[in-house]
Length: 337
Ligand SMILES: Nc1ncnc2c1ncn2[C@@H]1O[C@H](COP(=O)(O)OP(=O)(O)O)[C@@H](O)[C@H]1O
Ligand code: SF4
Ligand SMILES: [Mg+2]
Image (cartoon, rainbow, N blue to C red; front, side, top):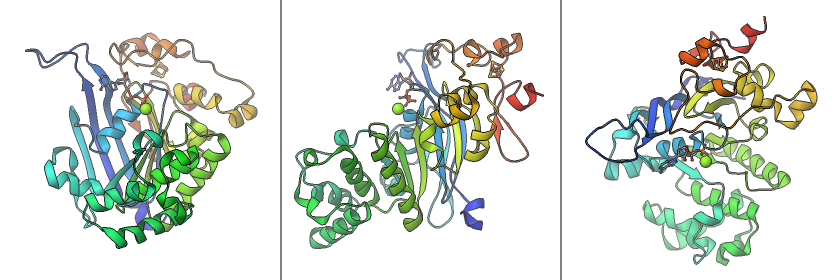
């Protein structure tokens, strides 16, 4: 249940965000063969909510996560984060220590925590490192905070003196979460945080996210290629295709009445949903290359409803009266009436 303030205050506002990876740095600024990994996304993440970013591999999700977490600089666009005192800062333009200070508020959790956990460091050292880097605590005080964080993520305090290889995938993800929480962030970005885990372990980690959100007042951006992951954990879902958001809505509305043909196809691949619908939309063809985008609607080569207009004119994303957004010339509820 959301509070009245969380319904109204955005923690993160992204406007027309782009990241193009150029092939060369020649005389010409515009590289027609650039990979348009993120190609003009706008998204608002409200405080206390879980917003999901969903799409097939290669659609630009991880690039978006890196832009928002400050690991990559955008080609253009705004990323505004509400600070603790309530002002909105354009973080894309911040440099040096101002940037570092602000980015305490935003932490990333990855699919494979093992690759981000130094195998030669003990769990205590791994979790205490950000405490030291940000000047939060050292020594005994840091050890006490580490013990508290381990407890929060469901691990025993005797995990402290062991090394990452001694833990299972789910336990390692808990260690990664404890490390992310060490700096007391407000926005946690999970980039496919449960994709490498078995279904039952993934469910436990998603439950942990939910209880941490309740206890610590966190806000999540949950990134996944698998819509079934977000069904019970996200408040809103944004669907990405080839660097753009093609649909955004509350989770309930998106699952019950998808408006974009791509969302409809993704949903048909979710087992529980398929049973209800009895039909499965199989998408013809592969995702096009972000280096060579189709003309008009980027989804048109795979869309059964594509017309000449779709092949020529890019549909703009439009906002409905209930705050939902869709980028399609003939959204499904209109097409089917
Ligand atoms: N550093 C890079 N240089 C060039 N292309 C990149 C780079 N990082 C990602 N890409 C390309 O950008 C597109 C989006 O990638 P990514 O953000 O990793 O997608 P996702 O996380 O949705 O799978 C892909 O075509 C990928 O090959
Ligand atoms: S704009 Fe046309 S091609 Fe694109 S999703 Fe809508 S109907 Fe399909
Ligand atoms: Mg990715």
